[in-house]
Every structure is written in structure tokens, then in C-alpha cells.
Length: 327
Image (cartoon, rainbow, N blue to C red; front, side, top):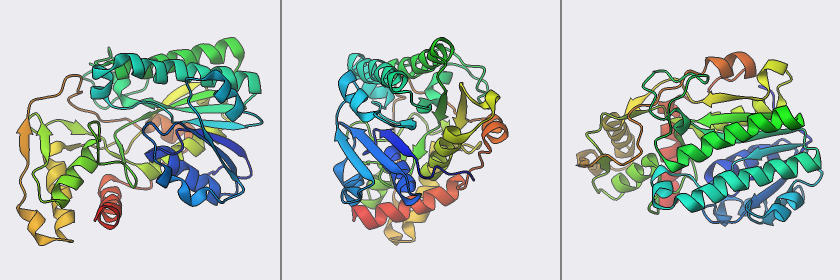
């Protein structure tokens, strides 16, 4: 696999779950890394082990401020843009802030990158862009209508990227993440993702709550696969591979009912009593997509992407991390 080496890289949202995992890899590969984060959802402990590294620079700033984006992009060759306000429910409760961060903030990064002559911007897109499309697997060129304000914001990112590539000649690649999970994903708060929520509940021998009847399914993607995809997208030289979007996933899916069973089985290796915990069921959440399953053929063909972790292996590693860090 091609990796980024000896390069000055900006990671926006670098104190977040995905961003901090990317930074870990970049610093191990002898890069100079700038992290831009306002710590609204990112955590200082995710990057604290890098603060003494002379090749790491933390800029506490907000992508909604153009001047801070300009400061962060100075002399940068590659931007890996992870900063965003995630969560469909959050966007439904507060669409204004989601739009300010995800759309206006993204536009600021594009403007700063254009002015600084950044060689390439790789940005976090989202599987939510597929919206009400019932086609499985999801193929990049065919999407539906968005089902939430969050999905709208991530689709607008793709539209802006397409326009900036054509009008300004920039190199931009979007990565549509499918339900990313792994170490450092926060299990706390109103908008926590489903895997850390289930793990936390089961570790506490409490019933995990499933929205709906548990038949909804997801293409869960371990964070190491996302780190790989960002690097491949940043480095590809194929003309047809640039200025487009890719699914980043495993190309398989599991239902929420199955997720509870597998998670419970893995955790019971640490504490047998967890085996007896059963889930509880609630109403379906507004904006939730029933099923997600990605075709990863495009990323395999044009980027050389190949998941290093299938779901079961990734979940085992993630649960080991949670057991050692939440107890």
C-alpha cells in the first residue's frame, strides 16, 4: 500500500476519532502534521501523546473562521479534511449549526486550499448521501434524495468539490464513509454512534437500545480502512481517479440484531455475565436509512483500496480497546 511520507499534511478535525487515527499513522510515517480542531467534539486526550513531537502542530481553531483555515493551510501539500458535525439526529435537532460547520466550514477550507496552492484535498463525504435510494449495493454514480439535514450538507460538499475542481483546477477527492468504528470513538453523549453505545451498555450489563425491530443493517467499517483510503486518495496519480468520490467500506453488512449478538459474545470473553444481557427496542429514528451496503469496486480499481480489517476482526480490536480504556 502506498503511504504518505515526508510531507506537510493538514488534518482538520484531527482531535476527533477518525482524525486522530489518521494523525497517528502520518506521524509514524515521518510526516509533518498540522491538526486544526476546535474541540467541540474532538478530545485533547486523542492527540496528547503527540504534543511533544516537533513534527506535530496543534492549531486550536474553527473551520468556520476563514483566517484560521488560512493559517492552518500555510505551506501545506495535502489536506485530509475530517472536521464536521456528524450525526443525523444532531442535524435534525440543529440544522443551522450542522450547515455552518459542514457547508460553510468546508467552503472555507476549499478557499484556503486554493489560495495556498495545496496540491490535493481529500475530504470526508458520507454514505448518507445515498438517501432514499433502495439500491443495494450502493454505487457511487447513483444516489437518492437526502433524508436528513446532515445528508444534505455532505452532498453539498460533493457539489462544491466538483465545481472547485472544474472552475479552479483543484484536485479534490471525496470519501463516502460507511459507519466507521474503532478505538477512540466516543460512547458518551446524545449523539454517540451505535457500536460504542452497544459496547458501553453491555459492559455495564445494561440492555442496549435498538431503534426499530433490529432488522436495519449497516456496512460497518473499521477505522484502519479509512486511514488507508485517505492515504491512497491523497497519493493517486491516475487522472480518472481524481475529482470524484469513493465508497469506503467493507462491502458487507450486518443487522443491528446480529450486531448485538456478536458484540455480546465478544464481551462475554471478558465477563461471562454479559452473555445474559438482552436488548430493548424503541421506535425508528427520523432520517435513518434502513440498509447500507457499499460497492467498493471503484475504490479497489482506481485507488488500490483493499480493506485490511473485515467487520469481525475490527470489532474484536475495538472491543479490546474499549475494555482496556472504559473500565
